[in-house]
Length: 223
Image (cartoon, rainbow, N blue to C red; front, side, top):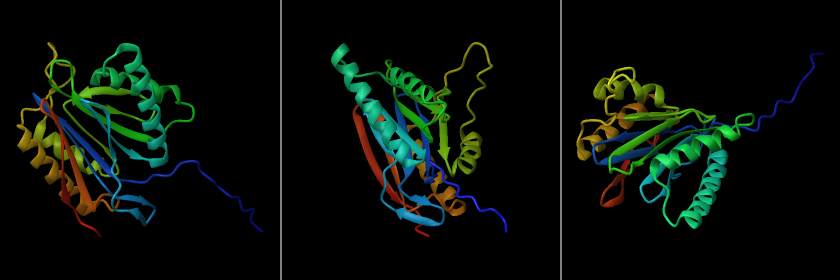
């Protein structure tokens, strides 16, 4: 008789895809609203995007319980920062805080894959992309989640960011206008939804610019 062993994992992967694109004076952050486990859809109306500061948004895929815990911790740390400095945290400062927070938990990580987007102190769009243990990089565009392997080659083909090895360092922002970036995001999600069962239902798009933050939605496949 073979010995049977119960395997329990503290982690799950709830799927979903996130994208962020930085422009000269805007940032587009987008994610689908499907939350799954295995072949089951838990909800079709789950927002993966959260506001961290006035000019800073975060989209997260992976294990949504860990994502929630991470969001609560960042909100608490940001509140302490506001009391101490009497101002909101800038997007690059929030990017560093997120990196430190993830790295601090590196031996029992938050199973979350994040893209952080917003405006820097000069009003330029900025996107930061992360792994689960806090390694991060400022880029012109990025994707995380179950559909990222489908989305990233598409973005590379359309946007072709300059190599970080080039000297002098090239600007990471993309040459698209705000409306072109939003249309590109809609196209990549419509494409990824066809091939990734964990991406679908609805697309939430958040645009951050000098005027503030606005959201729009687009329906995706529901099967």
